[in-house]
Length: 183
Image 1 (cartoon, rainbow, N blue to C red):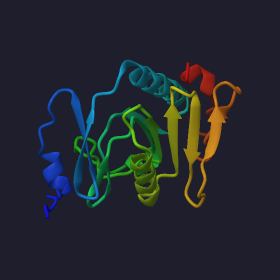
Image 2 (image 1 turned 90 degrees about the horizontal axis):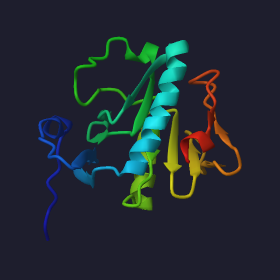
Image 3 (image 1 turned 60 degrees about the vertical axis):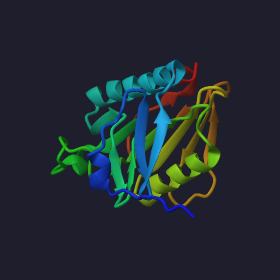
């Protein structure tokens, strides 16, 4: 029986990431995923732009894309888009990769290569690390799911129905029309 070689966050941080692949660390196991496709990247960029435009006027924190973040001693995830409140960034070494902080809001764009059990684990890891909301966007179905701590089932929203996403406790005044993101 073969044994897995598990990595620490430090070993993960020392890895060279070849072009065309992305790494994450899940319970010590190196996860390798292919580069994202055009639709994934366009959706991520729209989300990032909407959040950045809001934060330029209401500077309550920072938004980043594709940033490695330490969620536990053996978990590093790279949310497609992440928001971190300004007060939580004080004293954080922003030059360090991975960041030693979990985001307040983690957003993932679901691609055809993503498996449901892997997504469930990722959402669970985010919430266990103290993330206050996780949004999953499905460009192919134009649906989005919102997960929050303490709730077993996600809230499901539809771009076709004209639904919006809001996080008043994190981003007071921010409202995102899904049809502007999931085109």
